[in-house]
Length: 157
Image 1 (tube, helix red, strand yellow):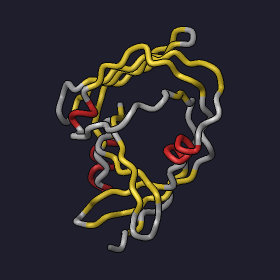
Image 2 (image 1 turned 120 degrees about the vertical axis):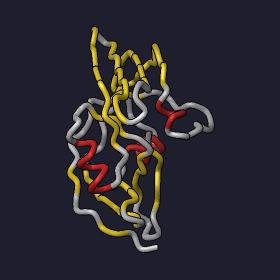
Image 3 (image 1 turned 120 degrees about the horizontal axis):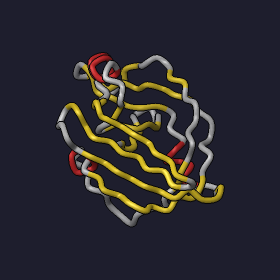
């Protein structure tokens, strides 16, 4: 679960409310060092033809929270300006030791395909205490991009 942020210097980023990972070692390391709310989860991705199912069951904290999403992936598609803005993050904001930090990152544009949501059963959004607003956007699929992270710097208030 991520929110979008802009600091006083105009740097765009994301602010994570939760971030699931199957790698237990990442959770205390990144939580402790940077305050990013990583959670340990059992995660699985299964594929059958053009359908992909993502499953997550949280192990720690709030054991048992689940999310399951199944999509049918379609043709390549050009993103709208809003979709480009939502995926063109230039970093992340986080809070640690009573300070706000900026962690820059770089990546190329995300390649997108259409995605039809076949199943969505999620408990993670409500657990993050975020209430979605507005009309749903279209669903998109991407195989991902390679990202490089830079050193964190303190945000001046």
